[in-house]
Image 1: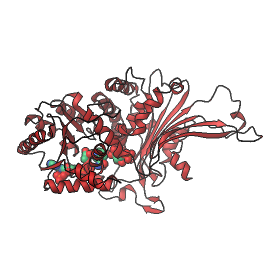
Image 2: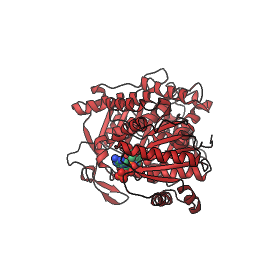
Image 3: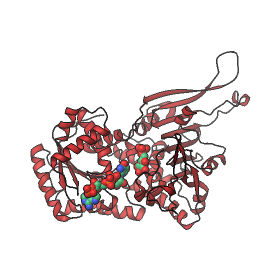
Image 4: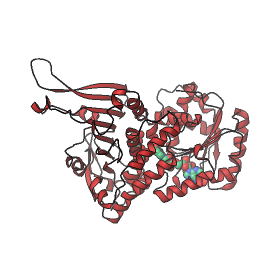
Length: 500
Ligand SMILES: NC(=O)C1=CN([C@@H]2O[C@H](COP(=O)(O)OP(=O)(O)OC[C@H]3O[C@@H](n4cnc5c(N)ncnc54)[C@H](OP(=O)(O)O)[C@@H]3O)[C@@H](O)[C@H]2O)C=CC1
Ligand SMILES: O=C1O[C@H](COP(=O)(O)O)[C@@H](O)[C@H](O)[C@H]1O
């Protein structure tokens, strides 16, 4: 449900950066032009570059025109007039006094009641420093609420994430810490709950008695682009699996919450991680595949391999693709493999969840034909948003053959990725104090514990070896073998099927 956002000041640390320009300004703009933000708000952009307030407002307007197509210029101008700029090095204590002075003026001018949201759109090395100074310099000491949004990556392993968390928790209460995972803001990721718990026909068969296996694919066509400095250290495991992929697993596998309250939902999600089988080194080798893209062709154009990309070490062992077979050892899911895969430079940009149902007890029809397909429920996260259900029917006419048919609901079909919308939803929730779709510390800690075992096995050399896949493919053969060993195969994302 959409509510009006309370009066507040928003401080964006890293306001000249990529995230602020491509996602945050457009997301705030959408909230404003839809009327969810009234006039009583201010946004302070912070970074080290030299800008006047006017320059910054012009920059914000231009980012919105570029990244929010169709924005109306008079609304953009009015919206941008709420923006202020402070040149500040976040590591320098004295500059926080200037920030406080500016915020005090804005609190008064916009009657914000001292409500403040701090968004850390900065490199992770600053995630501990900023909250520490915000508290020590008294900026968080106002009458209103104080909330902080932390971008990813939240640490690079469990010890670093724990240390960071301790630093932040010394300055903000857990309830006021919003660890963002933008996949949780995606329309269809949020819809998983409704599809499951709002439809008796699904919830009653959502278990190992009726479900054969689950597949989650998030494939990208882009390569590492200009992010090698970050990506070389993270790879696909830390960049996508630790957060987005595990979040989707939790949403599919969680038990129904007692109530639709943030803590009830987050409690159920975290229970999934408690039941997730944590691999030993041998199990990592058997169940986790890692690979790197080699040169290939995308849309008829030659593209370089990962090792030829700018700022990538010539001998780099960073994985750009991960596939894994996961097990959730609980009453509902024992015996149902969860196959996940994600990678860069793959054939299509697509995120899809496929629930494969078991065959009925007697092969009345499918014994006679190869056209039989198991029933599949596909949840299309992006670029299309929707759900489809594959059934078997009889083709028209005098035949006993089978014809797989799709019943499809398309929520929205757009050429654009829906990330800005995800940020819009999440910013809206955060300004309203709703943390349902933000990650709680216990979720983050458990996901790191799971991931650290994989990293350790890879580093020790006992885990699976790094293999290769051609740019423009759907990943290495080893990822296919992970499934064929169980008599399964990857269901092609809908986009690939359409393009064939
Ligand atoms: N970009 C994206 O699509 C995504 C980004 N993220 C995360 O968001 C965060 C920001 O990413 P992104 O915007 O791409 O990063 P950028 O490198 O584009 O921006 C970093 C920002 O930090 C500012 N900055 C750097 N050092 C200081 C300092 N000492 N004091 C004040 N400001 C400083 C820079 O401005 P200046 O140099 O002027 O000081 C710039 O505004 C990262 O944690 C990233 O992992 C997460 C998901 C997606
Ligand atoms: O967090 C990240 O996500 C993007 C993919 O997001 P999407 O919304 O476009 O699917 C990924 O490209 C990036 O490497 C990662 O840091």
